[in-house]
Length: 639
Image: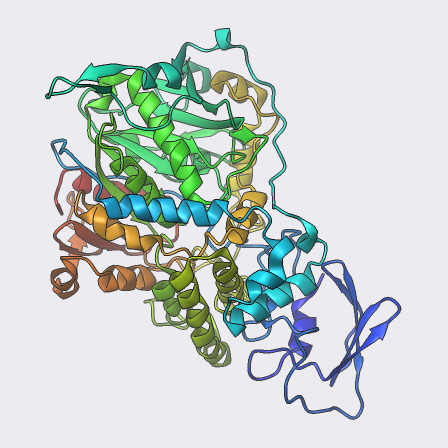
């Protein structure tokens, strides 16, 4: 473990390690520094630290022993307890992946419109998918690929190779398959065949035969069971659970559907996606916006502000190997995950056509700021579909890293509406690190290559987010210290214990041996596929041509803060850019009693909402305000 104390000794004033010399040692690499510290093991390397007397000035620190990209923001990264997570993504033992717990909501105009995705959307999705899938043997060809990168990106890859030499020998980063036992088909109430769906032909208006629905569905099946509301007591409404199966790739995505408490025959349908990447959407169900929460004694607590108050909600565990989902293979980029989501929705609405005519909305939080633009674009790219997509919501999301990373410093240093968490020196360190971070992100945006995007993710997450991480404060809420749980919230442990109860797993038809709230392997895989800094915000302008987009943010969140989300929405180039940028921020009040709950900015199809005193998970902190916002969006107030 490399502790923050050790890293302090390895730092100079420029945010780089002040290593003055290095020499071979029988047990590893001996690093001579001006101040004496003890021996440590980092990665799988033994590093001996001893005093150099007299101290020697450092004109240019050696790359052999400094890792500013990986570990050093203002020279100390990670939590004060040091690096404790064995993941290849090293500096996040507490808030682990910078965007962990996700959630969101959805929205709706009143009537379905014939939606068609421009060819540009198809081209972007195709290009992103090819670039991600092409990296099948990434580290085997490291030196060849590095020749085409900027000096900063090359240096980062050098440092990755030095810190994790064994990892460099692997062709892929594959998440460990979850142990599972597949149930017999007779255990399910419905099985919907993708091949049979694909083989349905209809006659178009020109008298020509064509497939009823677009998409490559042949390999997919949807298995569904009726969930007895009395068996678990989560809610009294009609419920379904099941798996989307990709038989060719052995992928199985779990979902849980709740009907609306109000008017399920007419109310809209909302898809809920947690973030991570790699966190189960069932954490959002039981911690934020679902019909019930899990209590400390692993019981259930009815939620009167559940988002199925006026909408039916689908909670989806994606990508595979997240939550109750499982696979012998792995998904490591957002584009690939989008194909699975399209198949699930198509087969769900085929099995339950009574919901297919109702307005449908994609919602998500955190890393869903990546997911949603891709998933919406995937759906819109299919002209013949049974998915009545009407709007999307992104809550406290990461969507445009180049813009958003600039606002970590203001949020941590008292410019986001809450007291500063960091010292003046730490804030200056973040300022000093920002130009390099933005340069790396720009290189990623220019090439969209894994070789450029991975260095940007590694450096920026550690140099820009690292100073806050060390404080022990909750990255999802600047007002609080982290709890005992590694992700700061004890509720996640309660949820995990509840969803591992045999009677719960049996009632839902879960096929995995165990449930985990978050899968850090998935997080690492997305990072090392270059997915983290991909410029998926470039898809949003074409989405805005078709449907409304709502970006909302709780204003006490650090990790995907409201300042950054307001900034990227204001900077986005689209036909309504100037009008949106000029639109004023107006007070937002509860409809019931006029209490001020935030502010709203809206023009054309684009809306931004700031919700006061909400953290990363707005429905958790502000359940009444978040439901009020959702219902008004569903009612078309800002569309």
